[in-house]
Image 1: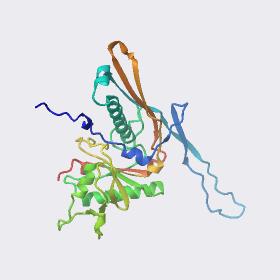
Image 2: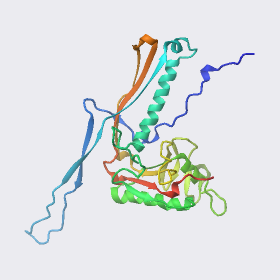
Image 3: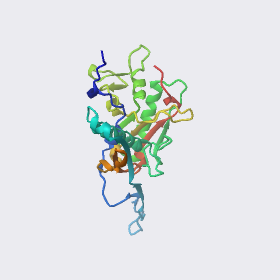
Length: 307
């Protein structure tokens, strides 16, 4: 008997989404420009106690500079035969458009996290090396045999550095799914989990497991919501096997995103009966408005975990 093809149930290519980008939240990209700048104060004015009556009071002038972002273009295209489009038993144009859109979401999020700031890339939170954006707080966890109890104080250090340098609280923790799984798998000396389900009425728990998810909110750690993002690097460090943990204030970052444009061209390659699909979008990011509001945990303690 001939095989039955369930074409409508085709398996789309699995891709990571845009967790960190959506955590920051984008605003409409203004038109008519190829760069966006935001002024900031680097040295503030000052006051002091007047030594005596009629004595000169404190005078300190503001010093300012600016942070900026070029408008980046993220784009892709694909050429498809007319025969495939018109003779396919499914709407193959929708398959292509959906696949391009899925990869755009992934690449957009990767730019937010790891854009190098050069070659028209965004200046991402971690940068291309995973060391963190210039001016951010660096926290290093060094361990030959990593354990949750060793990582936990480093998270506290990352949180306090945001509070100390930014004078405002951290709002979220973002890590790779494998790092959250490492914490979920960690046990105390009585083989009890350190991260426990929030529904269990936890007592003296290190953290809470809110829900099972591949890329979304998953629980809390030290009072902060934890989000897992598969786009976080797992190839940083000297041995190219380290991931990173970000403790930051997403509300400090400014992210602009245009409206993604999906277009179809039948005339371009009409001599070969080929149709071109194209998707592109413009974006800009200023993650370093207050770099002290970002802490990046790195080090050998974040090498590939074992279970």
